[in-house]
Length: 208
Image (cartoon, rainbow, N blue to C red; front, side, top):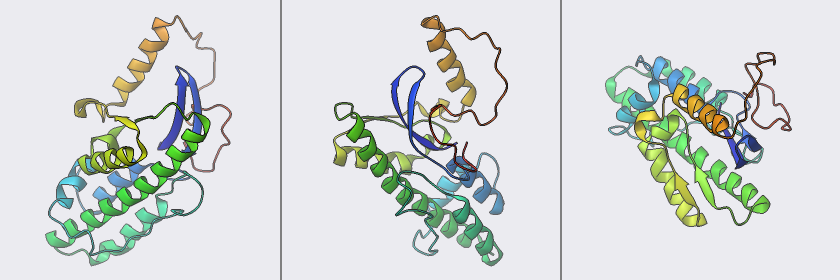
């Protein structure tokens, strides 16, 4: 999943925006696979991008100027798939990786700025952004989001690099925080692979 959430307390979430199709991490992994790289794809894309020409390939930025802070990455992935047949050399791979990363960063900058605006309208005194998940390990993404938060007078926090890609650690920590507050579950609920953190949020087709 990729989403923007306002967090009021443990278990109290309000969704501001979400992906309507692929998650960003999935887009990184699938792009890496198309380029013949390994898994997870994020670190390899980032490494290749360091030596590539980010202006060589012009890639789409789906719903960039609409949909609030909702995101879409399926079209970007499809564009990579179409370009793949023209990727013949290591230089081509580096350039496509750099162009992909630049496109993702520009999308995240604009959509995060929109989410910050939405959040500020709801809670003007709470000016904190927490970036979590595997993509939070990308140094270029960190740098751009730090710059955005400086512009918006927001504080920003990232997990340590070593836990950014470990969903098990994130889940365990959430469980520990619930345990501390004696919020125990009876485990009498049905399994739902698309369980939304914000129970009142409208389900979007394809969104996790």
